[in-house]
Image (cartoon, rainbow, N blue to C red; front, side):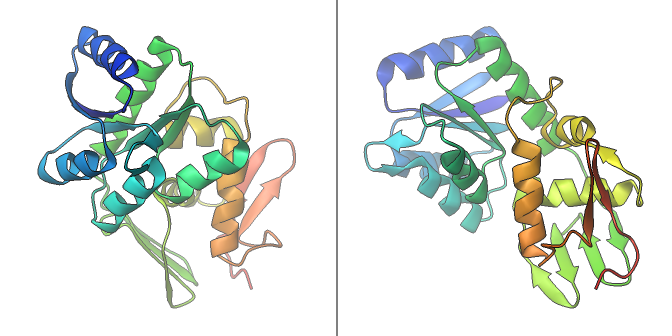
Length: 225
């Protein structure tokens, strides 16, 4: 498994490399935004570990540029920024996971392995309702005849809700299936992503993705408008 570590601080970068190599990963590194985009473009990685504070740019800009270039490699942002708005912004730019420093090496390795597994899954189904078509091969969504652009996490959340065909899905289940981390998060990551997904579906009243209080969410497979 080959990983790209993007970190401008030499001591932190070297510590990351040693940790990952001790777990059997093949590790490349980059210390600038420009180098990171170049290496992600010309090489095939299982996961990218991306710091946000780079000398020639912001890691969120790097992630956004990669997604604009159709580089779908899973990205884990690793940063000292821990404010909720920063986490939301990171997911908006195309990140798949977010950890703050100082980090637990064991947790980091587990999350990277989970991201790599999910990045290699082949999904070929097409889900259809009266008003929606979700194509998992093309990673596309048509909602009431309009193309809707979703982030990776938003897409995977919607797919998992559709797979359950109207059944209630617990928050813990959504976290495990979409993020792949065994422990339920202490922050409201699932709820934040559901809200952003609802916004894109103009579903502020919860008619498409319905909340079951104290449990989780369900997708309304019937006509929702």
